[in-house]
Image (cartoon, rainbow, N blue to C red; front, side):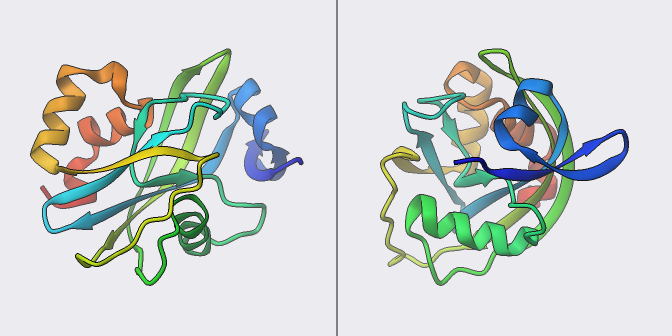
Length: 172
């Protein structure tokens, strides 16, 4: 099944096949969500069947909006689809742009709307096995340390977020 995402070609936003956007390194829209519980963030380990960065740890949810899908709608949809999370309200924090090699001849060149959502202690997870192989709650300071000490265990975008945008995301 083809997934069309919003990407810029010659300065115009057009629908492009997701895999084609990554093969060509096209600048495209994305959404990332961080679910927090006090000073801990929920991470996901990407399923081994993912076509790039399998087995690496990422923020709670990261995806591409469908063509003409608002970023907030996309964030809520993917929290439910990837992790079974409902009943949280993602809040927009900032928009960032980055470019990263994700292996296999693929490039993420994303304009990302970053969201944060607060979880209560009873929030239930139901990860989709095709998307997520594991989840973990980790303290922000511990995450920053681990990303610095073991960067190869984390997706390029999570490393970029933690290194360059943590203050804007977490206010810390």
